[in-house]
Length: 282
Image 1: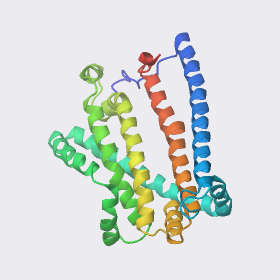
Image 2: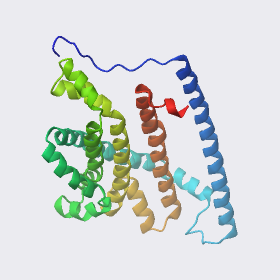
Image 3: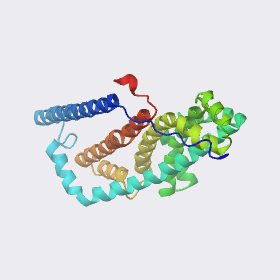
């Protein structure tokens, strides 16, 4: 890039104070885990007490032990269905990120297109994901491609808008400084604008993942998928297996919690640390 006068933005090095702060955050995380375990213990206790009082029939509200037994009975079937659901999620979500970022960059590059598309994207982002299901059934069919279509249409607009707004809100001084050093075109986007917009992109991707996850489970149920967590829920509804339904719901919740805490939260904190945005949280 013009004699390599501009290089990629380098992550800043951690000071002693920052290392101490990170250790404190680690201890706080342990406290969060302890509080979560305590909350779950209280919740299960109330659940068991409600079951013993017989307020609802066993078919409507099974005991925690019955749900645990359902987990054991599902066994390999649950693992298979989780794998199929996660495969669909990864494919659909990856396509959403690729297309969303690409269209978002085009919106920044072509201002008139960006203004028009951003208005449509905001409206389509608020469109209920389940509303795409009848369209997908008639347009594509009852197959994996139809499910993937629903996932993509439910999540792509969050990525698109976060890319568009993130790059547009980058301080102009960054671009001016880079241009003074000879950066322009794609190198300017690659080495300056996109890294500076990363915090906004992470927020958009996290939101898009949430939309994709909701849409996927709903599509699997309504489109009668042969495999997947939505399939287990549908079978449980059909045969009135509330213990199986609750086991599936717990699995869906656990997967969402793992992704939020172990993937997106850590990724967001890493990006914020990289840009020195966590200093105010000490």
